[in-house]
Amino acid sequence: MFIIVTLCLSIMLNVLLIWFVRKVQTNYILFIRDNLEGLTDMHQEFNDHLEVVNNMEMYFGDETLVGLLEHSKFTKERTENFLAILQGLDIEEAEEE
Image (cartoon, rainbow, N blue to C red; front, side):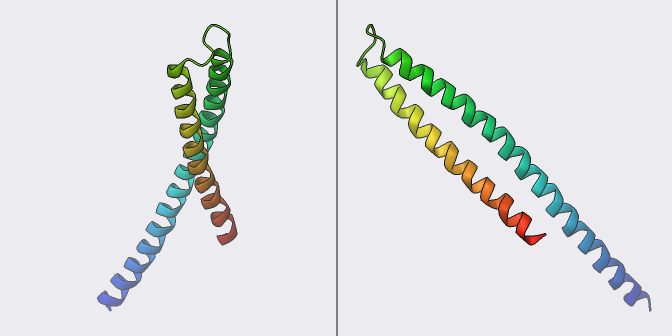
């Protein structure tokens, strides 16, 4: 009798723990995604500003600025890819519920 009660209690606690961990992970992913969207917007503003500076007559064609622009675009693409992955996880989560 003791073993059956212990087994039932263990199963209930494990189910509860799995539910809780899943909920915490989902909230964490949503938090990261929201903050990453802000980072992407900020990065786009930086990229636009950098292009304006690069197109100024005084700095036009400067190799340092050209390299910085390329690096900025690469970083933006990687950030957007990561954001797309996180948004895909959010869509999968909604489908499961």
